[in-house]
Image 1 (tube, rainbow, N blue to C red):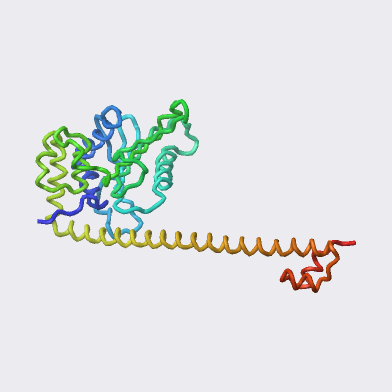
Image 2: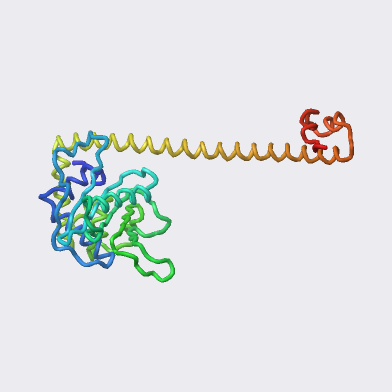
Length: 297
C-alpha cells in the first residue's frame, strides 16, 4: 500500500488537528517547545478542529491548526508544502491577525495573550543550516526581550539530515522525520521513545486505505500543485520584469548622460560665439535645441 504524503495540509490537519488526535498534537507541540527551552503544556483546546467542512476543494481555505493553552495563549501550526514566497511577511500578517483578534472593541490591551506561530516548511527558507529556528522580539545589542508575546518557529524539513541526527533518543526530530517521509522500515525506531507518534502513523495508514480520504487528498494535492505553479510563474515574471526594468533604466540613464554631455559641449561652443549651425554639426543637437541653451541677454 502506498502511503499518502503527510505534508499535504489537508492530511496534516486530519492527523494532527482532529479532536480524537488532540494528544498527537499536544505531544508534537511539547517536543517543539522542549527543543526551544520552553516548559511543556498540560492541555490544549482546539479552536478549529478538523471537520467535513474543511473541504480540500475550497481554494480559499487555509488548513492550519489553531489551539489555545490553559493559560489562554494561542498556537497556530501550518504546514506549507510549497513555497508561496514572502514567507516572512505572510507569517507576520497571520500572526498579527491572531494577536489582534483576541480583543473585542473597548477591551484593554492587557488582555492580549502570547501568540505562537509554528511553520513547518517543505522547502529551505532561512540562510542557515538549522532545521528549527525560533524568533522573538529582542533588543539588538543587549538581547533584552521587549515582550514575550511573539514567538515564531520555522521547521525546515529539507535541512533535516537523517545521517546526522539520533533518532534513538526521540524528540522533535522523530516527528519531523515522520513528516518528511522516512521509510516505514524505520518507523519502529522512531516510535521507540515517542509512543504517541505511533498514533499519528496509524492514522496515516488508515487514511491511506480510505477511498474517500484518498480522493479528497488527490483533490487538495492537485490544487496545491496548481497553486505552486502559479506562484512560481508569478515569481519568474517578477524577476524578468525587474531585469527588464533595470536594463531599461541603464539604457535610459546612458542616453540621458549622452544627451547632457552633448548639451555641455554646445554650451561651451556658444560661449565662444561659434555659429549654431556649426555647433549642430559637431554636437548632433538641432539648432533649435542649441538656441534653447543660449543664455538670455
